[in-house]
Image (cartoon, rainbow, N blue to C red; front, side, top):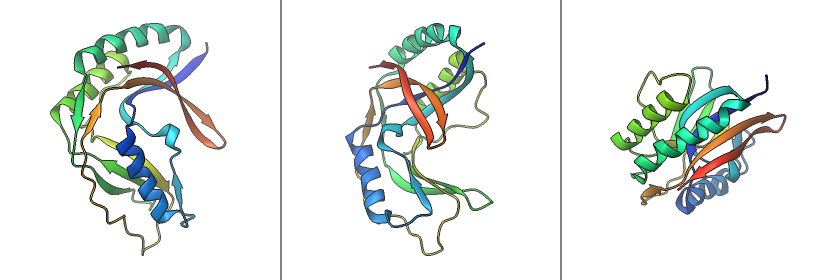
Length: 175
């Protein structure tokens, strides 16, 4: 039975793209950092897992209902943040202030579309880069990001794993 790896997310706006550009411009010489391609930027709502292809139309229909009841969502106070694992690898995020409306949407999306329920409250963020190990002298950009993000476009994505990295293909977009 053919399956596709799915997740639900929020498409970024121009402000998020600009924050990603600032990070890349200031740190493009660091080979330790792999920047996320602009077409893969998103805020994850829920991982839906490997799902049989025949379930996808039903997932999309349920997503449309859920998303129509919860848009728009405003997120604010973005900051660059390093999320490092114990082995030294990690990610650089653009993290927003936690909001109840975002948490609720993540929980509802996971419950009604996913195979699992989050075990902790999600942090609204966009992964901008990944690394295996950061140089000790690495510092995040000293930039004041003063914008609000209005999430108006929610997407059900397919995640394709390739040798070049993940590619995220929108299967359905809701506004």
